[in-house]
Image 1 (cartoon, rainbow, N blue to C red):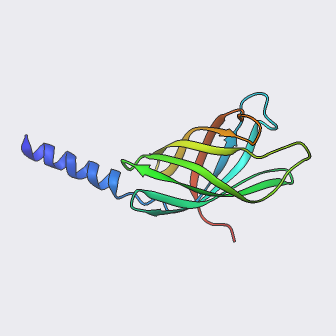
Image 2: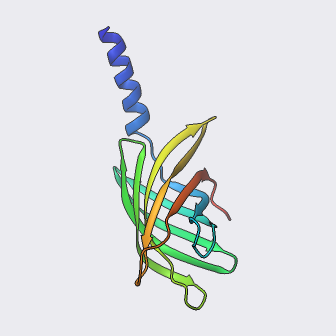
Length: 143
């Protein structure tokens, strides 16, 4: 029985705590009914140091976009909590303002591929944003 416990503990430690999520992640961010658009493209560049995360997010739809600094933590090898720190550059329509978001994502592995899924909420300078979902897959950087 002790051998089984030790084996399971080693497997959990290896899978959970050693996972490095640094790199390029691409997918979609949705916004519930009432938002500017129901779906946007989302790209994250993540650099992980221990449990700390730094990086950039890129959100775009049609010809509008925002690039933001992000930071957060990666806990227990599966929970990613991020927040937009500030907008670096952006293009937007008149009367529109990009949301400063917080993300709560769960790391999954299916058929040998890594993905993050979860929720987001945000605020602008004048109100709360209509929240939504995030779906990301580990990807190769575009040239």
